[in-house]
Amino acid sequence: MLRGTREALTGCHDLAMLDLDGVVYVDGEAVPQAAEAIAAAREQQMRVAFITNNASRTPATVSAHLRRIGVHADDADVVTSAQAAARVLAERLGEGARVVVLGADGLLESVRAVGLEPVGVEDDADAVVTGYGPDVLWRDVMRAAVRIREGLWWVASNTDQSIPTSYGVAPGHGVLVETLQRFSGVEPVVAGKPARPLLDETVRRVGGERPLMVGDRLDTDIEGAVGTGIEALLVLTGVTDLPTLLAAREQERPTYLHPDLRGLLEPHPEVVADGGVARCGGWSAHVEDGRLQVSGEGGEADWWRAVAVAGWAHLDRTGRPVETGDLVGPPSAVAR
Image (cartoon, rainbow, N blue to C red; front, top):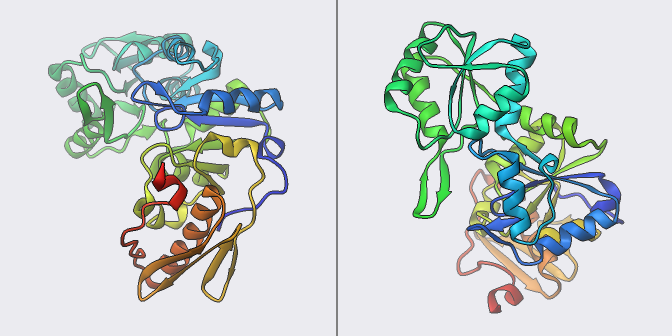
């Protein structure tokens, strides 16, 4: 279920595609050890790309933010779902096509960059593209909905249900996508994770023959990588906690698992599963009467690997996630 390696992931892969929120930063501030791990990966000749489903910010805005928190980034290192959506449009429509843009500056800039002409919602158009934009007017959404129902081709930057803001978690672009879908009966072409275009656009822009997706979300980062045939590293600095990890469906399970981005710099020991017991680096995990049991001692990463394999085996066998009781993580991490 998890793959073991004898060398660090920097030796197995030549491109790390890093999700941003929950991987590189949380609430706008750098995740501990993230900047150092990224710099060390680059020193070992690994390309690094920063990828995001957020279509509202331009690459220049994102890279400036990263530099402010101590992570080196050039504009060309950042790839957004807006850029992926623009590529989807350009490949089908060709240069000079007219596109209704419902979104923020990041989406508008990306559409122009591939030679398409942004137009208003009432203008003649070949397609409509939508993305998160807090200033998009409801009357424009209504008009676009009617035009989509009447046959105007529709590309959506992403289907994220939520977005972090300074005032808490708020509805994301996916909520608008669902509204347009229900009204029009039309499924859009989606550019962002877990759909394929964003990952393909990242490889096209940044290069690399052995890419690795690095994320904190099972349903976008990891599922997107699995569906694209790309290996994935799950880090636990974002939204995935123990119950979420152990409930992961087969298409949401990563190739590798580590508490943070230092996992790029280390070999990943194999988890040995035998007789219902998963063992890794001194830890043993099994399920007894539907409840996860862990014993032994060792490193934090190995604890997570052992419990993940034991939990997934139980889920596959019974169809039910294992109960975790009072467990939330390895003893050393809980103590911190």
